[in-house]
Image (cartoon, rainbow, N blue to C red):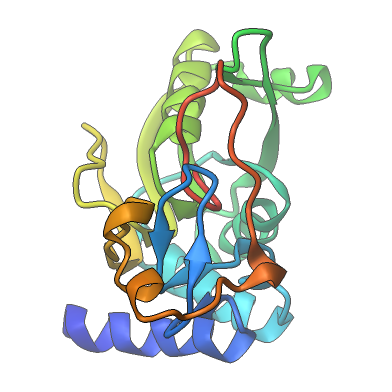
Length: 216
């Protein structure tokens, strides 16, 4: 299937779930404005569609033996579970816990009960839902390495920046980077389009990195 067709189909699925919002006026946590928004919490609310998305990603990595599917976060975990179920290697599904330290830096850790599955250098597929900064995925890569695992690939629903690259194979269903604007340069503000208050994001703490909505 042509990449353009695949992206159009899967973007349509996100539109169906209501996860992708456009033609409006949004304020991101960074403080920048945009006319498009991804509400990641909605991307995996329809089980049949989530299973379909998981099937596509699992099929892409079907030739690669996988022992573990690793994710973090609720939406990514639902997707990761579907991928693990659909992959021919029948890998186990495990998840990491994400939190921020006192300096605002994101960190991931593996629950103690999952550490047994990292014996013997397992082959790990990392799964994310919305990929914006790559911060979480980089943390997961470091986690796998620290546990003597081997990353074989990264699967995601949506990569929101072409600048995000990894040395491991990356497969994304939607590869779309939409423009954002400083408030003083915002064309929606100039046209008097009101800000969508339902999705109004609070700015990040001063000590944390500047991140977009749903950043991972």
